[in-house]
Length: 446
Image (cartoon, rainbow, N blue to C red):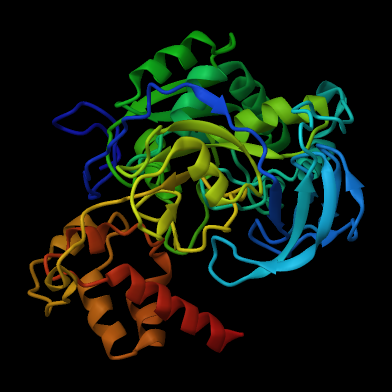
């Protein structure tokens, strides 16, 4: 498919699922949260090499000041989200699971929300290479959750040619509405960011894909489109995982990224709306990424909404501000389909955190957690957007045939969206099996 869906008339892709979306915070404007008493800033908030600290214990820092530099091209710097004093560089909990080195800042009480460290620049005077360098200096990464360094995402390999920038405004994960609010409240910053990205990549057109449950965003963005027609907005079917790169490219352009390939193989580069809106604001001001919008939601939250949160803010502080009912000690950072579950209340919000979900549901009977044998119903096959056979992959994982899964059954094409686990009537945790298999294969290669 990837052309028009026969029933909805909207552009879409084959397979996928329709979970309950729970977009109850879509009408909640972005509000700023106060600073916590302490910020925890992991040095590895992005894919690639961790940043290298520029500060030491006891040093004073001001809001916006660089506190860690990039370790080469596959890395990004880190900036102070608030004015305060460095408590130290310590092993702290992270959303990834294992503890990692983090700069801990004791925030000065009553410190200003104004950014005190910036180096404004005239973007129109920069060459594409200089623009890429400026993007790296912001510390920007993919805010949709992947946290891939943005300057690398916008660096086109010499053997590739791209013509189209695709902007992901789908936000197909249940509960999350932070991208929706960014599109509604910051369309001008988004358009600036798109123009910067087009100049850096040499693309001649840009398409913003937005699911049709956000038609207010579609209308506002169309009203802010610059003249000339180089940028346009496409409404696509509301379906998970519509926001995945390969799915969105198929939906809006009807181009198929080959197995094991990248969007650049079909002339495309993809970015998230939050990422480009952030670049549209940060680049001309010469500021670094120090805060982001997250959705705080779930039945355990008293005041659900979309909040502008300083990076490094512990979960505990957010829950104190928005109100939290229940005794559950496990939370999800991001969306419920792909976000990691964490238990430590000191876990901080990082660059890749798009949401904080507290699914404070009634206790579930142990029987519902039982894993039953595969009944070969093929629901997972019909749901998989990558057209894999999760049933066979799951059976091979149980036999620990990990290499064969990758070589013969395209395990590495799985991007762990969770559709197969969601539809499985036998409660088989397929996506967890696949993560383990890929991790073991990576260890063997290393």
